[in-house]
Structures are given as C-alpha cells and as structure tokens.
Length: 442
Image 1 (tube, rainbow, N blue to C red):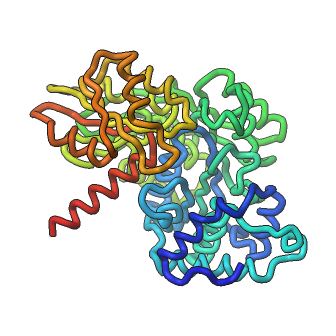
Image 2 (tube, rainbow, N blue to C red):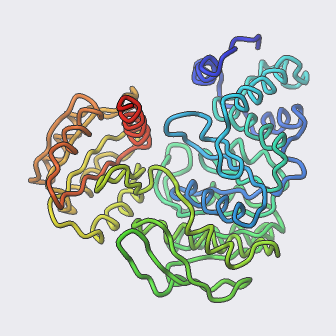
Image 3 (spheres, rainbow, N blue to C red):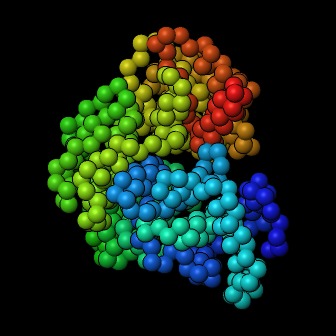
C-alpha cells in the first residue's frame, strides 16, 4: 500500500473502498498482522462481547461504569451511524480526526513492511480489520487499562477474536440474523458466538431461548470457561416510568442492588442486567456499587429508542428479535394520539417477516415507507406493498428517508408519537439530517 490518503475525508474514502479490493482474511492472518504492528492489545484487560442484539448497548454500559470508577477504558463498536470515528472511543469520547488520522497512518506504515507470510499472499486488511487495527493502536496510545471489544459478525471467525488473552467474555441475546454466515439454527448461531470463549475465562451470557442457553452452557463447559447465565427471572421489581425504568438485581459480588436505566426501552433492562453481571464478574475492587448504579443510569447510546425530538423516537431495530423488542416497548409506552412509523430496511434482512410482525401488531396508525440512501436498501414500493398486505393502516411511499421524516413529523398533532426503525443505516441518515438542519438554523 502506498500513501493514498492525506486528509481525514480521504482516509474515510480509502477505508470505504477497501471492500472493492480486499477479500476475507483468516483469523491467523489477522493475528499475525496484529502482532506485526506491536501487539497493541497485549497487557490490556479485554472484555469481549458477541451476540445478535444488544452488543453495542452492553459495551456502552460497561464503558460508562468503568468511567464512573475512574478506570480508563477503550471501546470498539460497530457499525457507526454518522462517522467512522464513533467506532473507537476512550472514556466515552470518540476519536478526534487527528487521533483517527494518526491510527490510520500507523496501520498504513505496517502495510509497507509486512512479514513475508503476509506479503507473499498479498494480504490487505478488510474494512473491519483495518478499523479494528486502528482502534487497537489508538487504545495503546491512550494507555487504556480495559478494552471493551465488540465482535462485528459471529464470533469464532471474527477479526476481533484474533485477540488471544481476555479478561471476560459476554454473549448477549442470540437470535436469527446473518444465517448465511452463522448457520440455520439457533444452536448453530450460538456455537459461532461462543467461539470467543477462552479456557478459564469467565463468561456471562443472556439465558433467553432454551436451545441457545443449552448450547452456550455446553460450549463453556467443553473448554472449562466458568459461565454465569442471566435471565429475565433475575430482574425484579420492574417499574416503568415516564422517561426511565427501575429494576433490581441480585449480584454475587455486590448483593441485592437497585438500578435505573435512562430510557423507556424495555430491552435495555436486559442489556443493563447483563452488563451489571459482567461488572460483578470482574471483581474489581475499585468499582463500588454506587459506581455501578451511576454508570448504568448515566449511559446514553444513540439510536436505541433515542428521543431525538419531542415525542420522536429513533430505534436501531434491524432484525426479527430487534423488531419484537421494539414493539414491546412501543406497546408499553402511553400514547394519547396517533402512532406513526418511518420504516426502511436492507434487502438482506428478513424484511417480509419484520414488516408482517409490525403490521399485525396494530400499533401504528400511519406508516411511511422510504428507501435507504444505500444501494442495499429495499425499494419503498415493495415495502409499502407488504405493509398494505398485512394492515389497513395508512401507508405512504416517500422518495427518501428525509422526505418521510419531514412528512411524518410535520403532520404530528398533540399526543402523537413518531417512531423510526428498520435499519442502522436509517438511524444514521436521520441523525445526519437533524445535525445539518440544526447547523443551518445558526
């Protein structure tokens, strides 16, 4: 690789173009390049997180708690909503353009002088690997103690699994998604997620579906990884308020403790309970019960039932389980007027099942179907046809997500609520639209 990027924008453009010339690399190649650039994850306490839904939220809860305890932590997550810099954060602050550029150039330097084992096969990091390497170098430069590491896809063959030494593994809710890569059954998918486990390393996992729990417990026992399942039964005294949810949880390290999550999204109680159990599993004496409670309450994660305008909520529901969790929250949220929904989805998802479930819920009076800016987006006409097949609610077709957003929000009356869901691409588009419109006001 020769120097092809000088400005931050050029660096983003280069990384976005990687899929055009780089194929899938083996985990051994990823590990070798990681060592080649100085093994930046060495001497870090790595908390590795896999799962289908909730990974990013659990990462954010963990980062928030560690920050409250005054412990320096890096966090690598995906995908991003508006800028690649979101994928790498230290103490809750995303990388600056200067820090991003420095990490980019360090990876670039590593590509100029590769080991023969990589150079001879024309190795180049994939899109995800390149950003992972950048994050690892960023964290090393920042001197973080903990690294909170989210898998991109699956677990066993994910680039992040090139990290060998881990402090804790966490597996969130497992459901049907990316079956073309991970398997056709929940047990197969769970086994792929469990590929991040390491012998002797504690594992905390969400015990939801029985077949998933059984496979995760089996995988952990097989390699000698101490496992702690967390289920809905562990959550007590659930109290949903206007903007928050209270609940209680018994933790071996902290005892019986009460929590508040700053959201109305019921699924975040599950994620917070999992994160709290993970913190307890660390048995880090510097983290007090007060730190744990404050960190859970203080966490904010964009695009997860986020109120972006009064009575306008943005949610990253983008698969069957995510949609079901989204609908459960909508159903519990009081509405004195009409509920409206802006929906857009990518073609690779089980979009017909997602649309049918939304339509048959009967929760929405008006639906706006819109295309995504990405070429992966489902055509709005196709989406609208499916909604009309399963519901009698008003369904309008818009030429863009921005037009749909403006149309639905401008038509709101007192008591109405507008929701936006279906894809994280959509969430990013709407966040960017709001940022531009606010900038234009000044």
